[in-house]
Length: 128
Image (cartoon, rainbow, N blue to C red; front, side):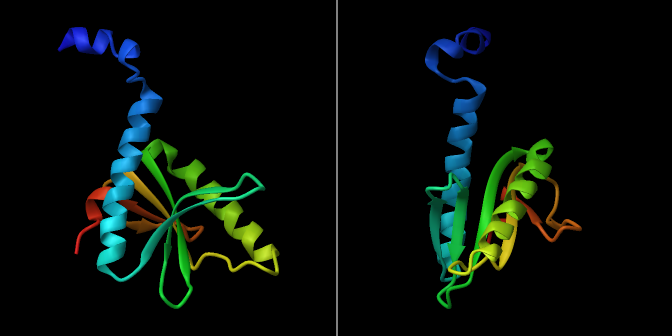
């Protein structure tokens, strides 16, 4: 086992690669949950270099923006990014801002709403 850890870089399993794999797994979980409540899951990126890890859209057109992070130490930066995107959309007369903002976190203990309105959800809370 120790040898595998020492050779991790040779196999391409650096921290960023592992984070990408886990993000993909969390997106899969979010997609299953989204479909179970009758919503669709999308990714978002535009020509202004704005990107949202996951967008859940309801049938009535409302949508929510998700940032997916592994650790609780990344929640603040993810929330700031989501708040900036919401502000950008609110200032664009052609756009509809998200109805909610959420950080889906791999290592968070409980669901809570931050003072800025961003919801933090541990991935383990995604169940029917």
